[in-house]
Figure 1: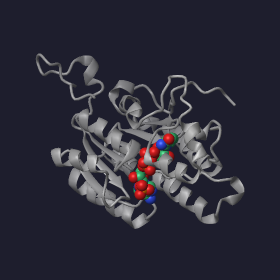
Figure 2: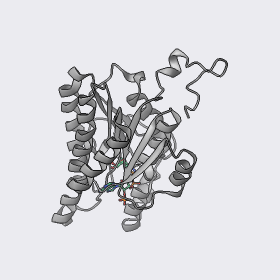
Figure 3: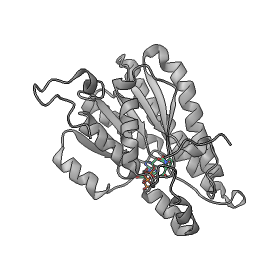
Length: 273
Ligand code: NDP
């Protein structure tokens, strides 16, 4: 946790911790009502940001609600279905009317489909594209418009997946991997396009992380649980908290000379397949 961005003695940020501070910044987290996005919202909160969470959930995770009750001015929640154009536009308009600026965005909203290739339905692919691709694209576009309008040297962090570049043995992720491939490629290109504005764009690619997303997949294919729990070389299954410091590094000034990069957080260095 980075609650201590201030040195304990003089309450002045030390040069090192100050670079990880998000004090005075507005960070928007899509899909932050539970799972990985929720853990990353807490990190931003602890690092001093005003955090705006959007999610399709009408009732976010009880832990999130507890944090929000303790920090009503610093942690805000907007229900927003990223697949609905009007809802996205209206939500961003409401957020900006209240807070005026967005200094950073984390896109964690996402869905997964684990299914044999030949069994995918038209609707599966459309929903994957609507949430993981179109939803991510327009959330980032709205944030970047604001950064450019106010000459903010902001930071964009998209949660990708190691499946975008590597095979995940045992999984049936062809369509999901394709949707995350969109995110991976989009981030590289966008980083280049926005570099002259001083806006940085990076991705974090998690391996298997224990969240509801994977639990619900395992409900349909219980054999996956065994694969999930075949611990990676670091000896344990990943948790949302394992992504917190990677995200903070890439969002904050600690990584001010890093853009167009992907940070894999999966408990092992994957070999090129
Ligand atoms: P969760 O399902 O726990 O959280 C994702 C959140 O996104 C949920 O609250 C979900 O709501 C929300 N969401 C889904 N559809 C929409 C939508 N249309 N509009 C707005 N929000 C929406 O998943 P994780 O925390 O595990 O995953 C977070 C991100 O990390 C995802 O992008 C995922 O692809 C990626 N990832 C996860 C890995 C893992 O092993 N868990 C590995 C690699 C990448 P609802 O629950 O109602 O669908």
